[in-house]
Amino acid sequence: MTRTRLKLILLGPALLFLGAFFVAPVAGFVAQGATPDQLNRLAMAGAYLRVLGNSFVIAGWVTLATLAVGYPVAYVLATMDRRRRGYWSLFVLLPFWSSFLVRSFAWIVLLGRNGPLNDLLVSTGLADRPQELLYGPAAVVIGMTNVLTPFAILTMLGVLEGIAPELSRAAGTLGARPVQAFFRIYLPLSFPGIAAAGLLVFVTAFGFFIAPALLGSVRETMIAQLVIQQVLELTNWPFAAMLCLALLVAALAVFLLYDRIVGLSSLAGGTGARRDGGRIGRAGSRILAMVGDGLARVAPSRPRPPGRAPATRAAALLVIFFLLAPLILLVPVSFSGQSFVSWPPTDPTLRWYGEVVASPIWLAAAGRSFFVAFLTALGCFAVAMPAGVAFMMMSGRSAAALFALIVSPLIVPRLVIAVSLFYVYARLGWVGTTLGLVIGHIVIALPFFFIAVLAVLKTYDTRLDQAAASLGAPPWTAARRVTLPLIGTGLVSASLFAFVTSLDELNVALFASGGLVSTLPKMMWDEATLRFSPVLAAVSTLVLLVMSAVVLLALRLGSSVKES
Image (cartoon, rainbow, N blue to C red; front, side):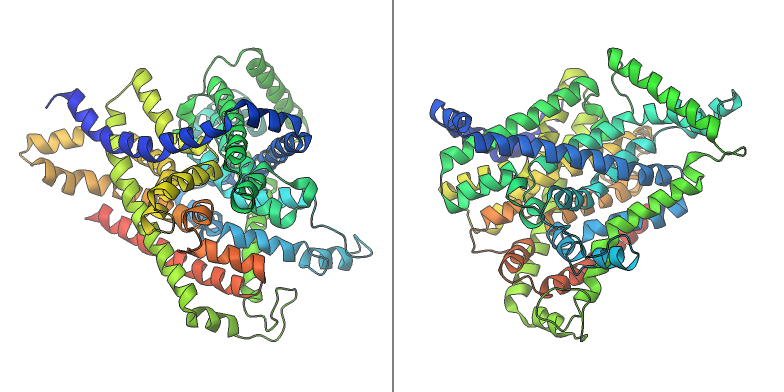
């Protein structure tokens, strides 16, 4: 078999799947909106343009806030030894195991007039009466930042871990103080990770609808909310397609600018930023050098590396507390004896847990969600693993084109993917089917799985396979005894990421379920919008416990694979 034919066979599943369930549906749906009538309607209605601009502004502020609070945590994790990094990473990953939806609702309690934050402001004398913290731009930015910061931390961490610590130590031997080495060397080298995190956060925030709908007012309406309104309430498909096209064009413009400045490779954890930054890059380097030199003049006489400085550690701990605050709130609320969510909870009871466990509807939704998540992880493995092997055999423009195709679902807002698939499912009769849910979840989770697989394969030395073959081992034996033990832990992590992504996916479930096949996030959304009871907190706590058990089991399996 020729090398070219082998690559085509390996790429076949990914090309066929993305072509049939991503490229064709999205292109076919948004093409309905690319008409003069719909374009004129969008241009003539100033309210829609204001919402589009408002979406840019909110997504921009969320991106800046996420990078600002996430970088100290990523930096501390990257400069820790492996054992302590594992403990810290656990607290960063905990928010992934809880629902985005419930964490957004938790902020309604945290920021409410009778919530913990207002109690703290009044008790400390910072305010003489409870403040109106909800239903404004600040509440929306806080809620979205809390949800998206873990994405930014994990994305930046992949790049920061690849920066050799010897570079900073070499700068120290040449007379640079730790803060100067950080601003002159470490921070510029970490820019690809910052840019990659910023891109993922911005595109996700741009298509967000949960936090704006729950925490904001009419003035904070984002374009994704209008798309949902056009589809579910007005059934105006052509104009919904026009709004999705506007979402897609804006996201692609940001993506092209990103690729122009940084390059696609940083999404896979590479540090090789493009060197054609021009005047902006040189000016930025000079500014960072000046900042480092200025801070060095006021630094303590016995400086510590920034990652070990008490202020940096304190900032990282504060951010982790910010991430965990909704989860900390949910546990006591789940035992509240009141029939509505409030603070502080009173009359502890297990009533809400009993209601969830005794409900066939909740149990069916939970079982369906875990089953769909399991199938999603298997599907991602079947599609992404062969494509990853083929990618490692490619170079140049062909490799860049393949990478761009597989990660493109990251660039397209999830809502656009969900509505496009719903439009296709409606004609195929797949609305309300498990197959439709699994396909949609694979489309969304596939880029994360592929990037994780590439990170594993790039560190694997193929000469080990050649050595096994030279000793007479058949291909399957070499794969089972050599390849799999070395990359097994990485594959388990990638599968786990796909599993968690599927388990918390609301966009596809909101449309593809058709109200017939509810998943856990869809049930939680309906519960939240109808009565907002402590049942939500009980369900979220149970999911958190189950996911913790799944993650620990996955880590144990990964370790056993590595040792075998």
